[in-house]
Amino acid sequence: MTSPHDKPAAVADTLTGGPRRGRPRGRPVGRLARGVPLPLLLPALLGLTFLVLPLVALLVRTPWGTLSDQLTSPEVWQALRLSLVCATAATAVSLVLGVPLAWLLARVDFPGRGLVRALVTLPLVLPPVVGGVALLMALGRNGVVGKWLDAWFGITLPFTTTGVVVAEAFVAMPFLVISVEGTLRAADPRYEEAATTLGASRFTAFRRVTLPLIAPGVAAGAVLAWARALGEFGATITFAGNFPGRTQTMPLAVYLALQSDPEAAIALSLVLLAVSVAVLAGLRDRWTTAS
Image 1: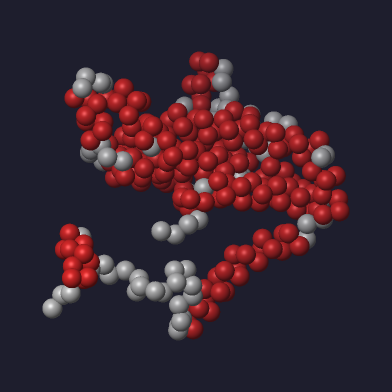
Image 2 (image 1 turned 120 degrees about the horizontal axis):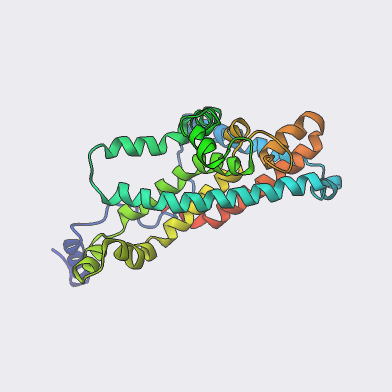
C-alpha cells in the first residue's frame, strides 16, 4: 500500500512513464566505480599514456631558456602571420560555402543525399597528400578547371598564397559542415515553417530565424575548421609548395626546421600545441564535458 508521502513520487513516475532507470541514487557521479575489470582498466591506462606521453615529452624537451629567441625570429613570425591569415581566410570560405551546404543536407530531401554527404565528408578520411594531388588535377595549370582559369582570367592557384587558402579550405570545410548539419537537425524546423506561413521567404526565414538559433553550432564548427586549417600540412605542401613568406605556414616551417634546427621545430610545435589547447578550452562545453 502506498503511503501519502509516496504519492508525489508515484504521480511523477506516472507522468514521466515510470520510475527512472539511471544511476543509483547516492552514488557520486564521476567517481571511479568499484570493481573495474582489470582487462578494461589496463588497456585504458595504456591508451591514455600513449596519447599523453608524446605531449609531455614535447614539453620536457622544449628549450625553455632559448624559447623567446626562437619564437621572436623573423622566420617564425613570418610563418605564424601567414598561417593565421590563411587559416582565417579558409574559415571564411568554409562559412560562406559550408553553411548553405549543411542547410541543404539537413533540410532538403533530394535523391542522392546520402552520396552527397559521403562526398562532403570524404576529405576527413582522405590522406591530405592525396587531397593535394586531387587539387592539382582540378585547379593546376593543366587541371580540369585550372587550365580555363589560366586561359580566361590569368588566375594561377598552385604555389601561391591563395593556393594555401584553397588547400586549407578543402580539408577544413567538412568539419564545419558536419557541425552545422548536426545543429540544424537538432533545431526545430517548425520555426522556419511558421516564418514562411507569415509571408517570409525561405531565405529570410533562414537568415532571421534559423541562423540565430544555430549560431553556437556555426561558431563551434568555424573554430574547428580554423584549427584544422591552421594545422594543415599534406595538401598545402603538395598543392602550394613550401616557399618562405608566400606558402610556408607553421606546420611546413616545423617540418623544415626539424631537418636543420630541432630546437626551433620544438618551439614552433609548442605554439601549435598551445593553439590546439586554446581551441579545446573554447569548445569545452561542446566537446570536453560528458552529459
